[in-house]
Amino acid sequence: MEILGENIYIQIAKGIIFGLLLGLIPFFIAKKRGHTEIGIWAIILCCLASSILNPVTAIPIAAIFTMVASLKEHEKIKD
Image (cartoon, rainbow, N blue to C red; front, side, top):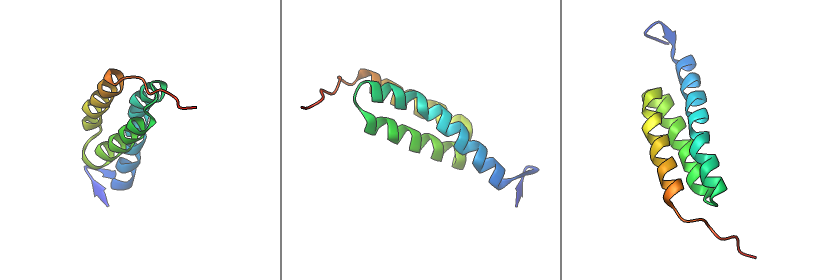
């Protein structure tokens, strides 16, 4: 299957790679602040949006998750 002269599977793979790289930014910020779950959701949604819709759609998602992770209070580690 080809869409716009490029194999659809190649487009999906490129989208997943771009989404993964972009999703790592909020992931590491959230992980540093103790909110790993937010970071994991950021990676998942960035990969999905980038592979299904368009790689550009992952940019606002990553920005929103970065802001949420930055503005949330630090999670205290329980002993």
